[in-house]
Picture 1 (cartoon, rainbow, N blue to C red):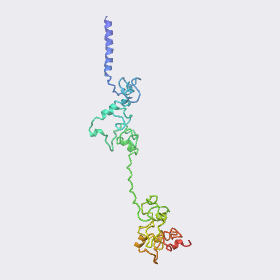
Picture 2 (tube, helix red, strand yellow):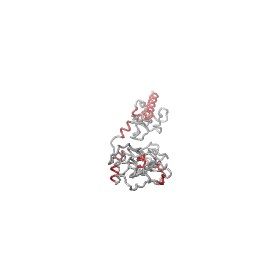
Picture 3 (cartoon, rainbow, N blue to C red):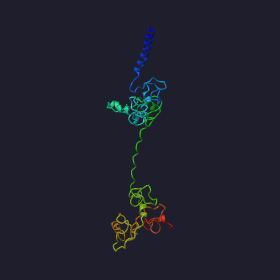
Picture 4 (spheres, helix red, strand yellow):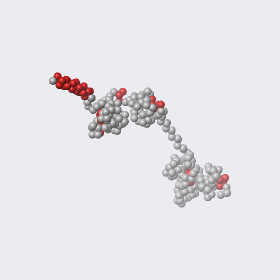
Length: 293
């Protein structure tokens, strides 16, 4: 009988430590004290870690709980992009990110920025983990030592060059005298109005003027431009008597024996007299270029 009690007491003694050990296993499925926790493999089943110490990898409800399917779920740190470390997909670390979104003091809401901040969990591993200049696994300014050592500090944005001043004045267009009118409304619009005068005047054939009266009229297409365009007394771009207002204003309202204005295009290698060249100048005023024409 005594030997029977001894067996009972021995069995009780053996059972007590097991019960105590069972009580030491944390409850709630949030213990990740296993050194291999969060490696995507349940290390409780293979015996590498003690039961209940690899909760993140061994949670049986992980597949049924997509809101917390992040391999780092329930580690009390938000790992979703834009909210935390960015190591998990959006919406897969809900419990940790909800807790992290609770009202905090300003010093806690954003990681400190500037030299010497190595709060990134991967700091000092010889790899820059800040966004844009590195892997992006950590927030900006939290892997300073690694990013500086790799020379990955963001370069300052280049200054925006000032826009060059628009050219002004006759023929100040960079495409002047190329045979094409580049002013807006009458040409390509590549240059400002009044900056491609020679090309635009040459490219507009004079319209057939109305029969001039004895006093002349303004049927010339260049009428009222402040320049006489009648032949013999102006540019010769229009029929005689069709630019009466401009020619009268310049004292050239009627034929006279006064010498025509000098051709401004003399010496450019192109004849600009009427009937011989472009007609931009009066007869006899571009003799050098029209010789032999």
